[in-house]
Image 1 (cartoon, rainbow, N blue to C red):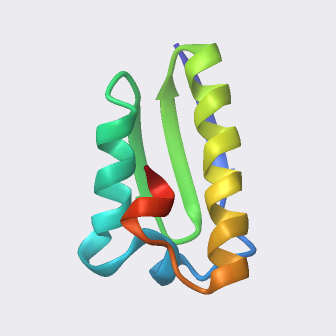
Image 2 (image 1 turned 90 degrees about the vertical axis):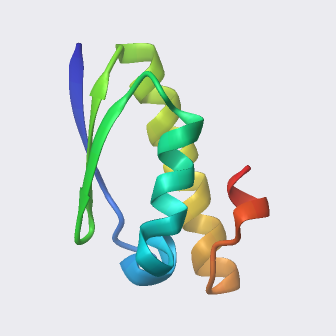
Length: 78
């Protein structure tokens, strides 16, 4: 098990996480093997090294999308 800390520094955390953390809940459902906690602009994720690396890559892609379109939809996450 490895722990990674991912910073959401480009996108607004409120837009990224969604209303009532709905986007974060969807992300959690897409990565069921990982344990994660999101506070402010920091996401802490714990799990297998390869799985956390994929997760970090996807989070940065979603962050770039959120910056470009100023929102993050359910379709973009899936």
